[in-house]
Structures are given as structure tokens and as C-alpha cells.
Image: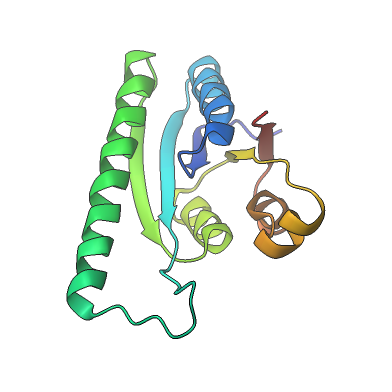
Length: 148
């Protein structure tokens, strides 16, 4: 088996992703691997079909989402570093599963770690499963950690 030198941890900052962070840090530490912490900002979609958001409001929302995500990523990176893990953070835009796969390739990750919400039935049908798509498309092994 190939030595694991680089881990990619993908997070949406939800409670379901917290156990996966702990697992990623633990694995990175025990393997003396580098950890990249990734967050993907999804595209803004109007909930109401006729809703119009002017460009100033849209830019403000985008800027605030980036500022908040960057702050959260830095907190996670600092926690990983305090645990003795070399860590970097990465912020991407777009579809979460697609961007996780792209980040995996661009960082040369040997393993992806992500949390699962454990949705079933209609919620899964409507919201989809990022973890399921990543497992199916990833060029490397994927560890999923149940959030509940």
C-alpha cells in the first residue's frame, strides 16, 4: 500500500463534520502527513424563482461568506497545528463534490476524510449526498465519518 503523506479534509463547518476533523487530525498526526483543510462555498441560488438580488447585495453576501469561511478555516488550521500537524487551508467555489475531487488532484492527496450527515429518504433525494459522490469519483481512498 502506498504511504499516505497528504490528507485532504473537506468540511462544511457543520456539527456532522466535527468528528471527521478529529479523525483527520489524528490520522495526519499518526502518519506524519500534511493536512489540507478544504471548504467549498456553494453557488448562490434563489429560493424564490422571481427573487432578484442586485449586484451590490450579491457582492456583499459573497464577501461575507468568504470572510466567515476563511475565519473558520483558519481556526481549524490553528487547532491542527497545535496538535502537531502541518496544515494548510483551501477555499474553493462551486459544487462541493466536484471541488473536493479537484482539490484532491491539485494537492496530490493520498486520502480524503469527510463527514456525513446520514440523510436518508426524501432529504437525501432532494439534497443529494456529497460524500457518496466523492466516494464514487475520488482518485484515492476516502474515509467517511458519521457525524451523529
